[in-house]
Structures are given as C-alpha cells and as structure tokens.
Length: 111
Length: 111
Image 1: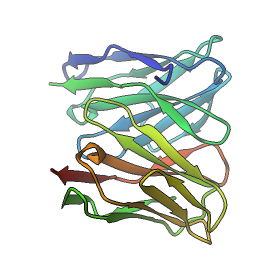
Image 2 (image 1 turned 180 degrees about the horizontal axis):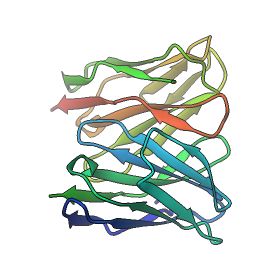
Image 3 (image 1 turned 45 degrees about the vertical axis):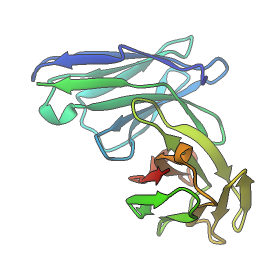
C-alpha cells in the first residue's frame, strides 16, 4: 500500500477531447511526478511538481499540463487528445532520495 | 539526454534457474532504483543503490551498482513463478529532480 490513489482507473475519450486525471499523494511527500507508460514500454517522465510549482519536465508538448494543490494532491490535464496518448498514466509521490511510490495508474484509451 | 538501456528485453526461464538483468547508461546517476511491475498495477520499489560498487541483497535477489555509477545489474537465484513480472531500472539524474526509467525486462518463470 503506497498511499497514492489515482482516479479514474479507466477512461475512454475520443480524439480532440480533453482529460483530467487526479492523484492523491502519500502523506508527507511534497513532490509528485507524473509518467506515461505505453504498452510494453517503461514509464516516460512527463513532469514533476514540488510545493505547487513545476520543477522538472520531460519531452512532452504543452498540451500536457498539471497542477499541484496545497494538500500536495495533483492533476494531469491533456488537451486535444491524440490516438498516441493512449497509455497508462502513473502518478508517484517522491522521496528526496528519488524513490517513487506509485499509484495503480489511470488507463486512458483514445478512439 | 540521459538514457537507460535494459537487457534482455524479454526472458522466459524454468523454475529454479538463475538469471541476470542488466541496466546500462553512458551517464552517471546520483542513485539507481529497481522496480517490479505486475499487469494493471504501478511499479513497486525493490531497492535503491547509491554508492558505486554497492551490492544489496533482498532474499534471492542481488542488486549491484557499477563502480562508476553508470550501470547496474539484478541477479535472481533459483527463480520462482512468483518472480514473473516487468523489472524496471530507474536512475535519479545528477541534478536530483528527475527519475528516468529503462524500457524494462519482462520475466516469465515457468513452473
């Protein structure tokens, strides 16, 4: 039990739509990271939030955006969905050592 | 760009056999972690190695961090069907704010 919960667990969208994924992070961890994991691949770093500010970003376009709230929960927003956005989206709370504690993920299917 | 390459990508062995999974990079990492992921779930942390040359043991699993902190290996002794899963190595960049993942090694242990 990592203490990280994500919602929704599964969702289906169509191209061009927008989606918001949510994450409640483990108590005491003020850093949250988001990853995209395509089928058969390792997780790809999207971005990271520390104390409500983005402090690191991977190679993802601006239509991937996020928020972190004062209670350290977080959202990932994706605009103008494309078919290739279909993936498992993972949220992780992060220790200062870099260790990540993942939720079970939100599986997004874009049709 | 820091990259982690894992090999092999896929491994199918009989129960009782030994195996080694490799994680290599041309970059130096502050620390390196190994995770295990089962279908439909997020990755779960197995171990973190920090010091070059460090060796850690977790029951039948032995983890080693290269002297130069660029590579790591995971050795499993007497594999069991319960070891089946996706094994991911992940490195914390020297800036300390981003953890990147390898593509993973999918292990299948047959009874």
